Length: 207
Image (cartoon, rainbow, N blue to C red; front, side):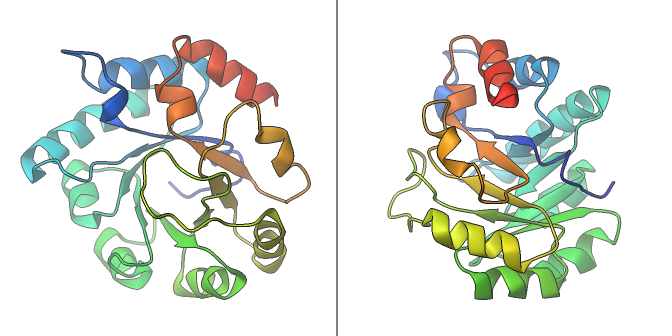
């Protein structure tokens, strides 16, 4: 499975910090899938590898039922073991080229960029899409670098692959991204933290 702009439209990034006691990720992820999210990324910074793989296998089966790709954050080895659709690698992670070697040409490989030079480098390295942020700060990462909307627009104009904005995006500020040229948004708390997840998805898709 390769990517396109439609797949990148509403990209849900998991955060177990929003789970209720005794809840696992499959419940809220399925709510979001039913409502229409177009891509899911499993993000686990502190989980043991065996748990990470089990979660990935479970979510891959779930996402496949809705014909939505599952992307693994940072770990192409986990993506390979779980049969996920691809991986997103940050600037300090394993290189895009090495991830491609591990996962093959049919996998989706995403890269991160904070400026035009990094975006062009990611595209040249073979990335299928680029994640750019943090456009409005972040509640999940400390010491993030803010990305101006002017730089985001410049990145979108410089590359030929889809660009996804991430970082503090919600229904109240999404309109500020209009005209930047992004293909979609990656959202964490505005989806996983929503009481009514279906309504949150519906609203963001309408916007």
